[in-house]
Image (cartoon, rainbow, N blue to C red; front, side, top):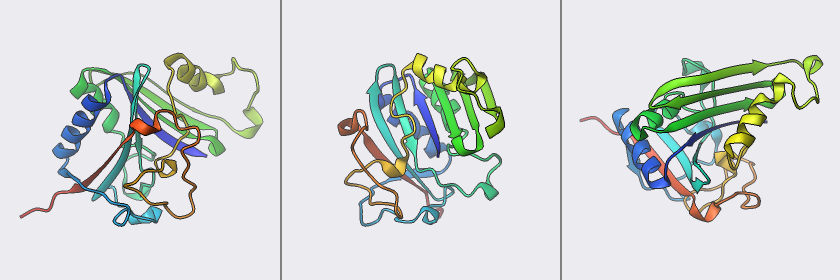
Length: 198
């Protein structure tokens, strides 16, 4: 299983405004999305033309940002499930702390980066092999788990594609369910498309 999340220490409305400002600077404009227009296949979405997000309500200290997670990694500077520029941009615009977390469990890989005021303050990449894995909760493999517990992040492991709502339709055969989604009634869907020139 793999996932990528961004968490910002700010109210949902401020995060929505900062997200729009960041994407506007990249040439994206908000668009109205309907279930009929929403892509139904992973590879239909080109991150250079369309960006899709669910933004959770603030749960405890953090507002979670859940991006559509298929990207064509061949065209990216860095592999990943999240837009690597988004967490530092939100942190800078909001003048707040933000985290970017990515996990590819089958590869024994996780990444986190913590930003304050747009500057990376802390980060780590960890990877192991099945032979190196341990059940000892103090093992380095579980450092990200300890950060998640300490910070109180919600909906960890939830993918954009799993979140049901009136503006989306199922993507391929990925199940959508409200079960276990904290704060689902307060989630906000946002879609952005690259503005047409001329």
